[in-house]
Length: 327
Image (cartoon, rainbow, N blue to C red):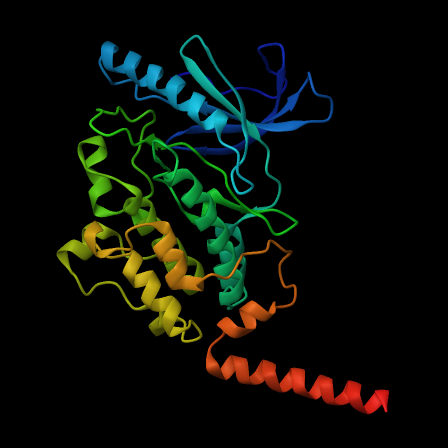
């Protein structure tokens, strides 16, 4: 097992390690300083391969890492961190990405739960709308790119309100007919993972696998309750509580789309993220903004009838007051 990098270590005479900021089955992520570009901080991901693989498969896994890193470096989307460099040193492989400031959505969900609150639906819809735009971009590449590890801890909210999908640990280039070796250990986090993904690369994963994880992420964010994993649901089909049975403030429309995305069989889910997004928020654009800022007119229209009535009353009172003052 390779030793972890230490604060002060310099890789390729360019990236100085500051500290470790994340660790999991797919490897460690470090905050690093770019010595070539003064003042720039970046995220350095050390990719952990499965060392139990036979030598020929381990070589194929590392070759695949280089191929996929090349693809990631070409991506350019506001909701994805930019991959700016990749390299190997001895038996270790590395990705260099933009460092994304802010809290991840798992942290925000935990904070809300500690305050006996739920995250506001309009905020979660805005975040998922942004993430949907990123997934549409990935899935509609000439060769679709699957993320396969969508979950609240992999989604960061920047101070400006922009959501970033920050971890590419289980990314898979979905080349038709090509046998793909998983480039890292693990198959995603169980409670967000669809049934077909448990088979590893012998299972058939496609863009609908990411849609399942997107629905499971929404379920968790809006209910403060981890969804029952797909394997248990396969054995006990009625095991998953409806979102509104936990949080009655969730709109019926949102609940329906969450449960649609979380269907066990891929054929019963939305056919693509565009269909998922349309069912969830229609054609409304998502505009990044800091938390707890005022609702837009689009979001007012998206609220449940009783919520819309309250906001409409407030607006009418304000208008009446302004007209009275103006006379």
